[in-house]
Length: 199
Image (cartoon, rainbow, N blue to C red; front, top):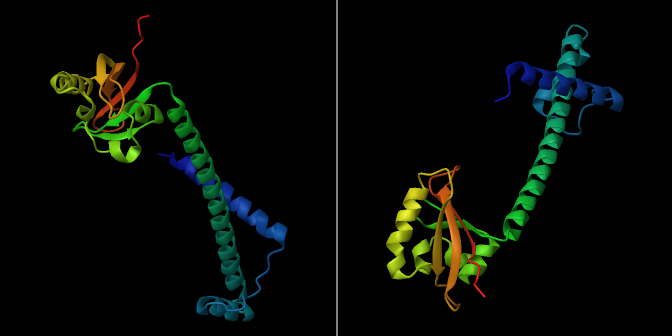
């Protein structure tokens, strides 16, 4: 959370920038072609000598607030572009990883994975999402893997295990896997690499 003095300082800086922009543009209090009723009232007040100073001050405030909003909008667009760029970079980095990486929910269903996992499982993303890891294991290995995942869900440290994956249309794949609790949500993070083959 932003501390209140820092927030007030940011608002003050934004207001100063808005006023400077208005002065630089030589902004006038000219009416728009089709002003709202409220603006008509303000302009009528501005034309009366008794109310002109207050009306002009109010119109100036409205202009300053409009410029503040424009500046905030520009800042939000810039921040969004930076976040989208960072997100795209992280996705590329994640997919380029030499290990298969999966996110399992607390029921053991696959929620996310990288390109390495899809290649290992010989599947596309539509066929793996929502599936349990059990779908690619020998029936005899399922209890061992379920117990491993249950322990990993309680651990901040990676827990290793060797697995044999039975991907559809592919040879059995021996992998060195590790799992740990997902720090962002209930469930488990799993990664694996192919086990080294002995020549």
